[in-house]
Image (tube, rainbow, N blue to C red; front, top):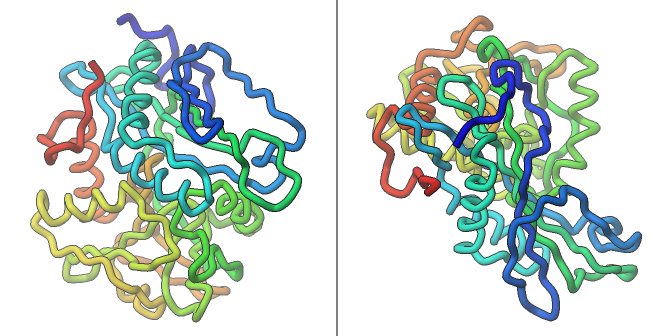
Length: 341
């Protein structure tokens, strides 16, 4: 298929309306057949559950053009799993996992002309989401829901390369123990908006959130998991029941062990340890790994030996290996790459 006439190299990380999206509705206790539509608009009653009580969740994943010209997605089954778990926690009817993956494929195939060409630095970002759609005035779950997927071509998250970020330790709590921090609910991101605006005003790229119970352990930022490298080359990432299980982070831990032969461990990480690490990165779909050069704790600076100019050497190897798998330059583990027919 001929690609759209877009300036792929100039794309930012923003919304570009594409031609088709997937829609399925839940009513009378079941999901309908679902299908593609050209209508990008949603019409809701003023009392819809999502507008009153924030009953909504979402996912994010990408489609790529590989080196040999195929169009593929990366581990969509894990997005299906995570959205299923999120829906259960929010008392929403989980969307069937097999239908989720098929819907992802259908949206990518229908918008194949918007999948950026290999080597452009751009990708096709997919946003599956679900929300309560019928009127709800009492505090209770909705009885009708809509599941949708749209896609948009996006440029690299960091123009001109990923320069190390400066973070600050937040005075806000991201999530409570036994709360909703481990699911991808819209409400988690709404509460993070004020802290991130405040961090930006103060000159920081993001917040480092500590655990709400003791404020001694590293959790995550508003939208990414942490990954650290010790001075002896071991990759470690925080373990907590109140952080989102990032698909990128889980994949990077496998890459560290199976591709790079590194020790890799998920464990509780105390903030007191952070000053002793050699490298730090933030893991997420958008940028894969965002390097961190410095963390400021109420005026006290923690600077990583990897510096403020470029990714640390092990972080760079992790990034290059995972993107190599995604772009078809390296053989993937079984099931990681799903080709669009």
